[in-house]
Image (cartoon, rainbow, N blue to C red; front, side):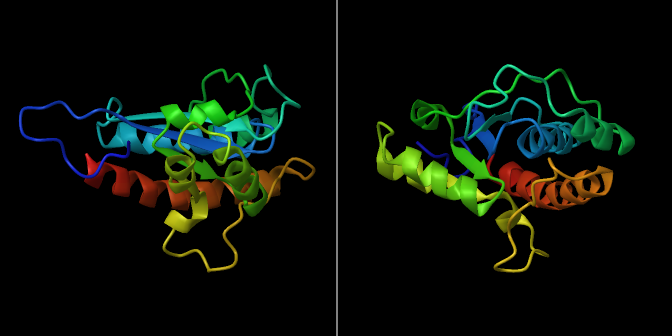
Length: 177
């Protein structure tokens, strides 16, 4: 069930549950997880939104985030915690209000998994692309490119796109609480 605005006065609002999804859960999605948590902490909303991340595949399950992603975050002043990569499963939809893909390939895979969820319609409705939250993003160019096979500049570029989208996403989430 998706939250539809503020809880009645005197009623604690259930936290909104957000999961970012990329390919292996070691570059883009854990970066988005760190950035959104930081944006929410800046607003004093650390308990209002629960944030995690996962990958579409099992390739890096159990591993920490890519050191280049971690270094890009640290250079920008973030303090990324130890990360344990995992694969997103159809059953994960039941525990998430928003499942946010980092590119169109992830969006398509999540759409396939949504059909296997307990509530396929609700699962499908929870899926979006991260950059769709960035008002400056150009329609048709909503993917955060995968920096995995590239260098520091591409990790920095991905981080900049993630930061812009997470800033707007955080504002939207805070308005819903």
